Length: 507
Image 1 (cartoon, one colour):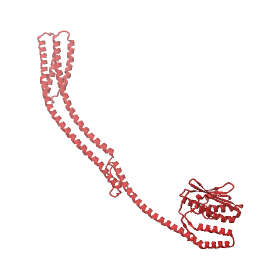
Image 2: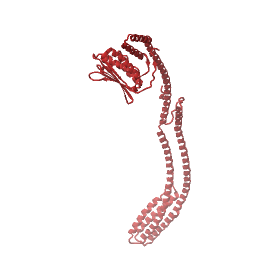
Image 3: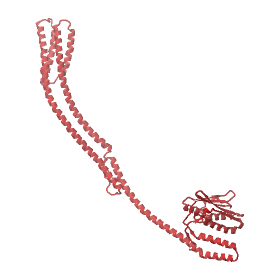
């Protein structure tokens, strides 16, 4: 039974995700943490830089305000002392006043943030407002050269002096004092940020290393277990518990497949061993059956030999031959000798014979048939001497000659002739058996398996030739012409020096 890792729903392991999901999750988590920490650190640093930039802007605004106060004082004096053509000067003064308001807005501060600087800022703003009101009053007076005009002019001009003192001395000193305290705090904060950054870096490195180690072990442990299982399979060890399913889905699939493969290989090897034992048993039984069949065939053959009783047959033929000889019946003597040769050839158990012996047997057979048919039968046998040693199975030429006699020449009133020709064609030997009888019916030949009137059937001869020559023989049968006659052609490989085992008929 093939091993399958099929579990109930309650025992089915939860999906743990794919390897790609693992890697993406770990990397995204670490990147998110690192990015968040970097954003926090950069936010703190940028906050310090922004505060520093604001303080630099205050210094720049103070410097700008100082220059603007100098220009404003010069325009104020020019407008107050000149009696004609003050329109352009007044326009420049108003433009500069708007610029001074912008600069003052840059220096604005709340009372809660720094009360001292707040009052200084309000003092400067009030002084600028007083100067603007004084200029308006001076321009509206009817007597520009009066004592009141000069007192107001002098007071406004004196305020410029106070404003420059406030901006350069008092306000700047307050800003510097505040910035000194802030710089000390900023230095401490920067040191703290650096320590925090180093600590976070170490923490991230340790956390990332631990995460990578755990993820690596969760990947390596299942792989090592599969490698060990592969070694066991390689060395033929299929026992042991199955691989535990761990790791991502890809590794779980490999682990499950390896478990199935090991169990399948184990079962297949057991099946092969069982089949091998069964095949050995069947082979032994087949060999025993073949030996039994062979012994049965030998027994049947020996029974046939015993029925014919060769001793009695040959002794009787010898007595008849000697009697005919004493009576001067030479033809009878030849016929009896030919018949005795035929009986001896057919009763001997041959593995194979030479072509010369087979043709001699055919010659004896045709001699007896010629005595029967008289002038109705003529025959020729033409075989080169060098081809007489060809080894062939016994009784492969005579059945075709017998067919020619029984089915070809006997039905023909005038008789005919049989010609046997042997010739060599390359590495093949061709045996041609030609008769001038009525001719064979090829349609009947195709459906004919064996003729019980023949000593041996045509199909049996073809099978024995194929078995002896290992499929390299050919048997062709065709009509000699439309008028009649049959041609049998045997194409056989040239083989000499056969087994030539003979069991004598009188043994």
